[in-house]
Length: 428
Image 1 (cartoon, helix red, strand yellow):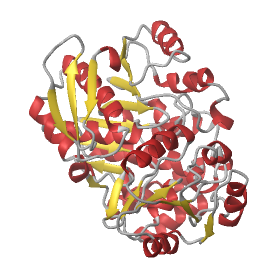
Image 2 (cartoon, rainbow, N blue to C red):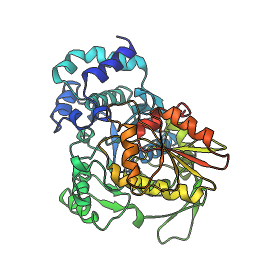
Image 3 (cartoon, rainbow, N blue to C red):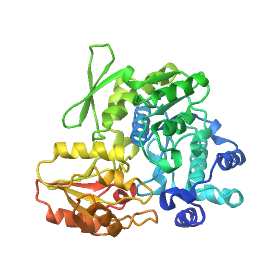
Image 4 (tube, rainbow, N blue to C red):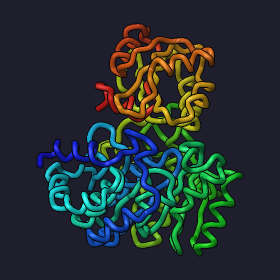
């Protein structure tokens, strides 16, 4: 098989949630347990860190990996979905799994895959675990795909876990209250494994506390440990341990309004990791934060795609994320705001449209995946919220049009869906 034949096999033979939505999900952990058992349980052959949450888990995972790489640990990183290339999901010290390794895995285990018929996600998780075991990583940062309790990654026994925050996303699968969603995320809390909660929320804190107590697991809320201040440009943060006067500045290669909250959880987790025998220095943290994109290859998080007019792309795709993004867009905008938007059809579209600024100029598009909401339908929905714009289905054509219309002092935002951002030719 060639690499492209492998990718075609993944997409054509294996159900993929990111492309088709809930029909691709296989309930329970039996598939991944059976698959990994046949592979020799590779997830038991390396130390890991587990990261869950509604928003920020991808950025937090990359920040952790960047710091650990800077400290000299051979670091695996598993994240999803990918932006441009499938191989982005599985990295060791920032280097994507090779095409040859992907082909070898599929060819070696094709009969097993045809027998078990894993989902796309189950296969990628098993491949990542095998790759990390074969490469003998010191630590692997494993990002949850969806939820936590029944996520395929949840067969690991990590050193420490991080739950970034809780918000409404995938409510049709995880529950329609924050408490129910928190219970699903809390499913990654393991017996006697410490857990860090990135953001404290009155509605969900007790869910995590009770789960941790039932598992005899140490639980820490990051805001009880670290204070974080963001400089106005969001290019750096100032950090201090709570009840201490000493502040330290950390430059951020990842820009945007989320990163101060992400940093707090990451720093709290690194403290625990040091107590477990994996220390990092202040210089390691500074380097990891300042070079996270260079070290890990992360893309699509408040990424500046061009200047004059300023174009920013971000993969935030639920109401909690959009609320923060819109507030920041309003803060930095000095001209007209242009919004190139596309969504997938199983999100809370109305919840996002009702918070969109009606003064902006909109260009409605759709990514080329089956889950995408038709651009014309999105336009029709937007009209009921007083939002005006034009329908340009192709994301790149929509962005090109916005650039042509915008003045040099205007701001163009592209987002609403990971897949819209992923299709941008300006993204690198």
